[in-house]
Amino acid sequence: MTESSLIFDHIYRRFNKKEVIRGLSFEVKPGQVYALLGRNGAGKTTALRIAMGFLKAHHGTCHILGRDSRTLRPKDRGRLGYVAEGHKRQALQVGEQSLRTHFPRFTPGAP
Image (cartoon, rainbow, N blue to C red; front, side, top):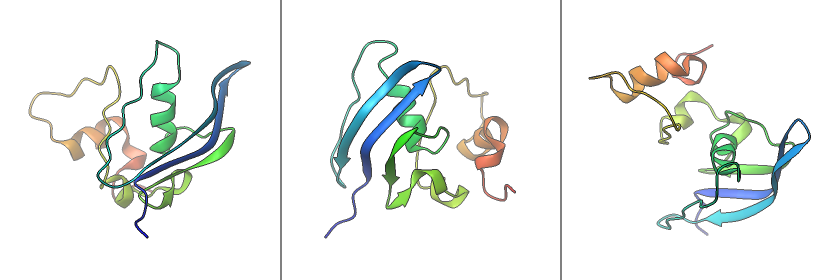
């Protein structure tokens, strides 16, 4: 059996009293391509931030490359690519340098 690339299993997330994600469940197998579509505020960015481990779901689980997204290590994140909306990369700055600048606790060698 092939390991799934991404699994969302009954994910719920709210901000204050506003429920942004309610019961999100889907699976992406290796080689598949998915797109998250929806209007502003639909939860697309929130879902990706949960998958990357930058944000915790209030309920449910998310696994990416076989690991629980809540326990991703810098080494795991090194296998992934994620550019946040509005992220401004400095000229000539490579990926790891950008991560060290904007997300220092998620980079290799971080405490």
